[in-house]
Length: 213
Picture 1 (spheres, one colour):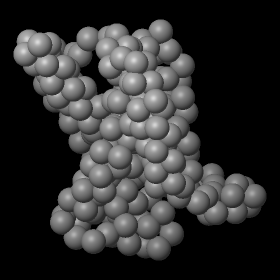
Picture 2: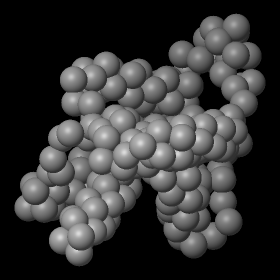
Picture 3: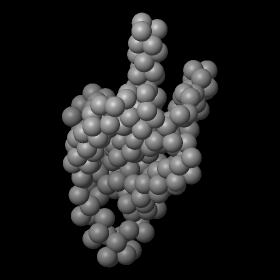
Picture 4: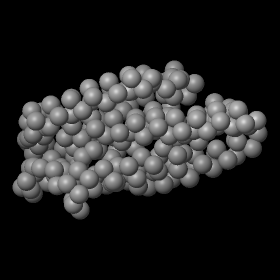
C-alpha cells in the first residue's frame, strides 16, 4: 500500500497545478481548441463520429459503484485489513463522491466548452454559479483519476499503466474538442484530491479503531 503524499508536498502540488491551469486558460486553451476543430472539420467522417459520442459517465459510475460495493461486502466478511478490501472500499466511495464533486464544481465555474464556443458561438467565459453546460473541470477526467488514484494507493506497481490510460483519456477529451487543456488538468487534480482525502479519512478512522481496541 502506498503512503499518502505529505501535506507540504500536496500544497506545493496544488500551487503548481493552479499556475499551470491559469497559464493554459490564458494562453493555450483557445489556440488548441481552434486547431483541433479545424482538423475535425477537415475530415468529414471524424466530424460525424465526434458529434455522436454519448455521455455514459453516469452509467459507468452507477454500475461501477454497485459492483465495487458488492465485491467489498463479500470480501470484507473475512477481514477488513486486507489490501484488496481497503482498495475496494476506497474505489467504491471515490467513484460516486467524485461524480458529486464534478457536478458541484461545474455549477460553480460554469465555463463555456470548446464546442459551445466554436460551433454555437457562445462567449468563451466562466459563468459563476449559474446553470450552464460547463466544461470545467472535466468530469470524465475527475472521476477516472479518482479511481486511478485509488489503484495507485494500493497497487503502485500498476503506476505506468494507470498513467498511460489516464493520459490517453486526456488526449481523447482534448482531441475531440469536448474539453480544453485546462479542463483536463483541473479534472485530474480534483480527481486526485478527492481520492486523497477519502483515503485520509479512512486511514484516520482505521487508526482510531486500532487505538480503541
